[in-house]
Image (cartoon, rainbow, N blue to C red; front, side, top):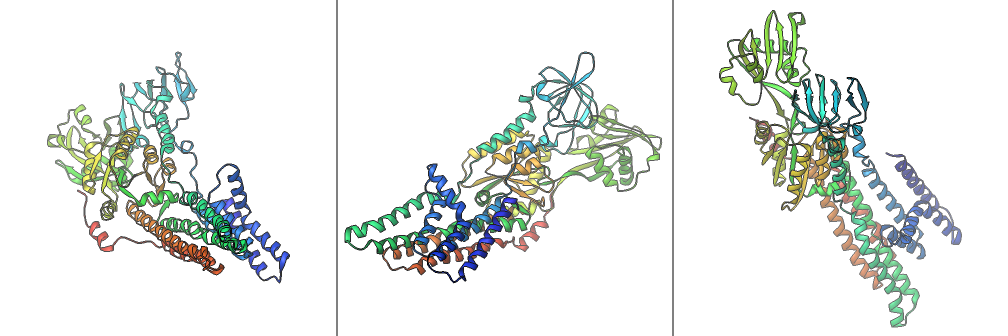
Length: 631
């Protein structure tokens, strides 16, 4: 809760206490009026001021104006309690709405961690000068040390290394680069020292384009205008005009007393106060947001909740969203040795490597490595590792490494996927298959979304076609687009947004590379438990537990909440319409006005509270889906 929200809550509670005290004071006449007026101004002074300020700006008919007219009208009728109660209820509703959406998003660009701090410019005398990336010209030579972020796009002139591009492409597997290879700004240099010839200035670089995409996409996102403001734009002038006509026209035409018709007109205004809508709609939205938060889903505002309720197209990132984001050894294919020996030699050779695949091999081995058995270990960028274990040379790496040392792999040469080949003393001894496996609940999530009527589900990834298609088919998605950079993902989403759809498009991602497309989609959903700050800030909805199965839960909550909002709108307008007609004809007293206002609001709020309760997917369907296996 923010300081402003705390102050507002204290003011509401203090006003309620004062209201109760004044109710029991034995006051009459002017002292009573002044006492009630003091309470009214204490709780509603800011609303009156906003109404006056908006009128001066030309924005006459809004909810502030209507609340002011209705409550001042109640005071003019002498019903001070009604005026205060209505304003108090309104402030409570406003506070709930403020609390629900108070955690407004800060600047996305400022939070993104891919912006490089500096560039090491290589001077003619061989020394280095540290400059801001914006100050380096195209064609300049820069040096990128291990652990540093690549500041500018370029071509490697000297050195070789592994680059962590996960922040840009979503790939968990580092990319190898060597002389003549391309480096992309925003990636991290993991191992070797690189000398790079800059090919693009900072303004044209990949990292700058991503930042620009996030900022511009956020501006292009269409935001649903608040319903109350739209409703009041037409409703407020209509009821005010009707009240004016009711106060003046009958006395002028029928020659009756102005007092009777002015009383009816003011009663008409009290009845017309949209308190039920003003309170129950924010309460319903708050209930839905609160219920979602209990389920581990953070929804940043009512407009996003409404948009999610209409989602019929879901686009997923792969790595870290549908998959675990880490490699696991899933197969062992020994050749002439035991599986235990194959895994042991691979683990010993990979002992000193920080590569994600090396970590997966050590985890699969699961035993303590006796480092005294390792005489030497050398990491060969782009190939793998070469080590001497128990006096024997062990090679662990890709097919290129085997070819470099003229190792005959036989049938294993045709294996697909992320394969780790192992050779010992010049003889091929087998391979290991490492995979980024789907999350345990990913299949359940996709099946549940089908049951909810989501028409299209596709995956966008920077990963290879083979890996992407395998995951998409295993999960039951409609398709996969692979080998994509951040700007490519935005283009794909743009194309889908321009296509024929009856509902909204939601994108689910977790990395910095997903931030632009999260901001561009109708609804951006970030996997927040392990996701980047940029993705979480760019998203409209955050899955705090990192579970894909929470997505259908969020859709259920949003649809239920929107249904409750519609029920309250129909109920409130229906009752008010009937009582307004009775009030205009003189058949509705102030008690009817109180029911049409406070009573209807109370019933609508009770209905809105149902949004706090979460409906879960049928247990038998979940069990059936968990029994399915990903090939």
